[in-house]
Length: 298
Image 1 (cartoon, rainbow, N blue to C red):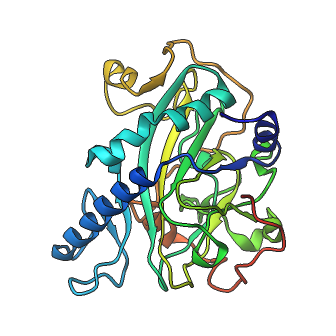
Image 2: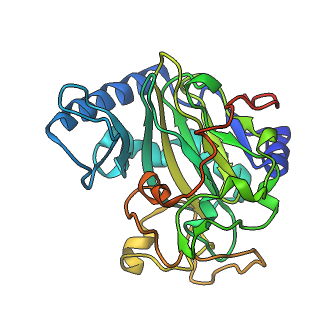
């Protein structure tokens, strides 16, 4: 599935875009199902176990910013977990033994979709090694204007940055500390049906959607089967083993000398990353220009 050039690019910058992984029929079904979920949110006035809502959500104008664990709520999403194109890409990066983690559908509606501040996924769920990645399935064309995911290249080879405020986890980096040069950020742009793959340690974020088009991105989290979560897993080993999407599991974790900073004490605002980041004192996307100088990854 991947060329040697793509593998080298992933290893060098921490992310790639792979075009045309989903078919037109698969995209049509995902869009239809997602529209139904949004319409069903009209009855809600606050977040629940499925929906994370924009602050401006109402029954007349339903505004959903995230569908939580979509793979567990509809088979159209669930089929993506073992999509042969996605699994093939991950095998090329890590080998045969791969385990699924969880999923989310982040939605940036035209003109108001919320930003996600700069962070590393690694700060949320450190493992015994860092062969972990999030696969983003583009339901819409993704461009800088509609809030494409952006990564800071090479940061997956550096430290795990502080994601705390006043000693408490907040799920984001303080942009005033100057840990990273955000002007070097690369947007991961592409056509609907493409996928992004970004390394668990790469610094990334996304600006608000300032365009007239939607931006819906399904994020599927995966890990090598010998990467074990340092904070444990919520169910039995038998259930955990059912998350394998390729190859075989192991009870011998691979231990690598990777930097770790635990997400403790937990965020004051619990829930999704949007809620966690309410604990921030300083934000990047409220003041900074959203157009980085670097060329997009397509």
